[in-house]
Amino acid sequence: MPHVKITGLLLLIVAAFLLYFGFNQADSAVEKISETLTGKYSDETMSYLIGGVVAACIGLYLVIKRK
Image 1 (cartoon, helix red, strand yellow):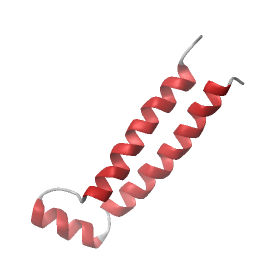
Image 2 (spheres, one colour):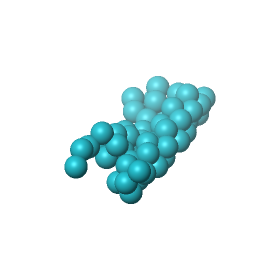
Image 3 (tube, helix red, strand yellow):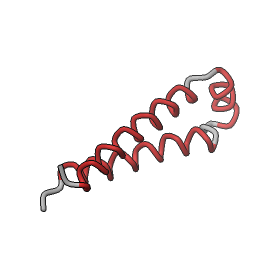
């Protein structure tokens, strides 16, 4: 398996962890109160979610990409 595919798989695993923590944090009571008052998630939660999506996109591209 080429190194690019392995890197893509590792990025997909990292993305899964980031999205998992981001969604768990978004579901917390403190975050729900903060979202209700401000209308948006905290910067940390958004960092997890955006980082997870970016890592998933790059990882998927690397896994699917042909030479």
